[in-house]
Image (cartoon, rainbow, N blue to C red; front, side, top):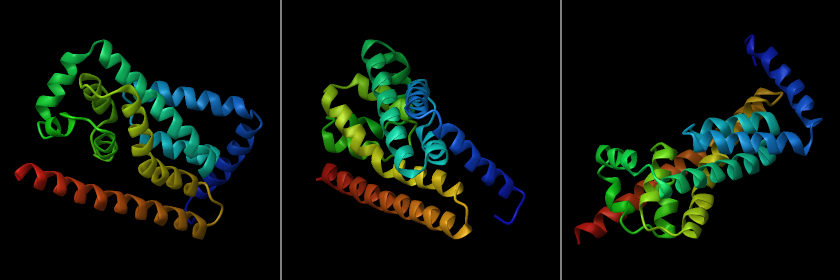
Length: 197
């Protein structure tokens, strides 16, 4: 707001108005492109920020959430039909994932979605397990919510007209990320403790 980027923020508002003119078509195109990108291995979180910047928080969250889930499910299906060699090599790089994926329940799918591991790798690894399609989909939908909220907040916060509004959303996003990190750490410790018993 105090740098030459202020002009970019103003042009961002113009782009939003321009995209709004396309209505539902813009939402569908962005959602489909997000799904394809996530299926091919693009990290979903930058797409969440982009969706927030383009569509605002509420619409951006829904579009990025559904798009990233559909893209993840497509990767999962491709893994079920093939791609096991690559997944096996990835599993060797992260041996600590093997116990978490040994019996993938709904809770484990949600927990694993919070880990800072590339999503496409997790999708492929899940495809190698015995996890049911419904468990994968519901666990992914629930598991994606926290960080999708945080990064969509950042994206929509960057496009705000005042610094105070931007900071409020970015600080809210940081709070969500910290809360998720704390919960994941707690759950991982509990999981390790139960394995030692």
